[in-house]
Length: 251
Image (cartoon, rainbow, N blue to C red; front, top):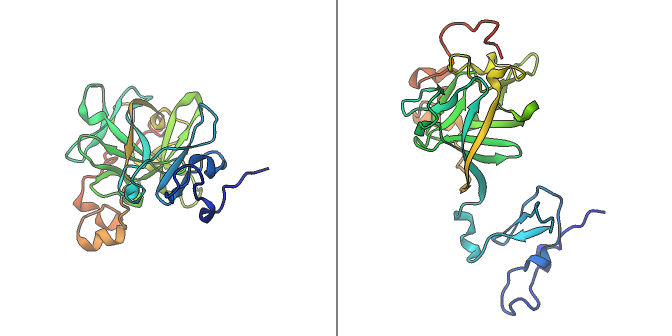
């Protein structure tokens, strides 16, 4: 039987602090695995290792909680099965490199939904994005084109697919991918069962992030920010062009 937390109005301390309006952890109860409870500024998280239920993970002062980092992500490198490290350079170039010490291969992997992440270069502060033609580009703003679904493939490889675009006829997802030369590929030319789409995150540390402010693509278009969707692709560097991929590259 599912145990539900008491109504927020009933979450008043008895012995904890006589004058405090904030709930104690014991008063929160248990909720299904994976949910997060935010009551009047207090944030609780699930303790999977101890299996002890919800734990109070944020402290005083509750009114300022909204301005503090609340998302737990990782600082990581993304190692491609093709033998390259994914790299995001300041000029907007996205490619693979053999140089594991490059500062442009380090990314913030920020959770922005259930199995959905934003991929941001630590050095450049630019977000990785995919437009409606399958081209990869970088964006100063976090938009719906910056959302990628993170899926675990066989042998613990991870794939990243656009949350916004896919093949209209078949419904096949568009994936982030590197070819055998380390070049970035158009998302609609990448298949999830091929090495080009397979990455292994190599975490460097756990980090806390503020939730990115989501910018509307139409709003950015009116402001002249140049988000490179199909009608605005000339104002930013698009990655994934060049020669048509061979059958060996389609992956």
